[in-house]
Image (cartoon, rainbow, N blue to C red):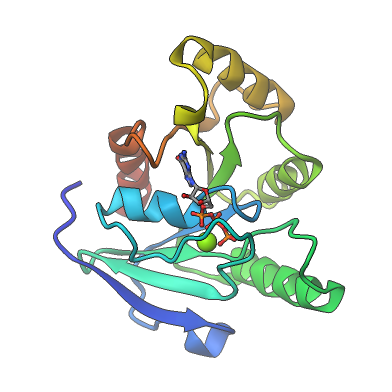
Length: 195
Ligand code: GTP
Ligand code: MG
């Protein structure tokens, strides 16, 4: 997809702030600091529209980005960040859960994981939860540039086996640094936006 327009719309703290124009939404879930915001920036060719940081916990609300007046990327706070209080974590959990289960315009969840390591317990829990509720998911394993190309396939296998993916489940290897996987991921997204 050729991105001609990308805008930050709102940092929502709850449903009353979600957009009401019914455009399809692509949500990003994943561990804190895994690279969700960077992935958005790479997909739209912008350095820093989605705020990124080497300090985990940067994304604290649901940030809506509108692309080409055609869809939204919804950037979520990461899970598994130890420095966030239990109360705060529970509140996010509730908000995310409610959104995933009730948001009519949600078309696809990009579950972002780190290609370098096997999935964490939280990753596995998240994946199983989404599957259980029949929410469309594409696993995106990012930071591929951090391992040598010769080992990519080994790590892909490790990730797929760790999450118990079936051969029909969607999976894209990605690098925000290099742009690997960008076109493949756009093709996946478009198939869900158009359906
Ligand atoms: P939270 O908002 O805290 O949940 O984090 P996030 O998942 O949005 O991660 P973010 O995009 O802010 O990236 C975290 C760190 O990883 C930053 O220092 C990024 O530059 C780095 N990073 C993200 N993606 C990649 C990638 O594909 N390759 C490399 N080398 N670094 C990456
Ligand atoms: Mg972020």
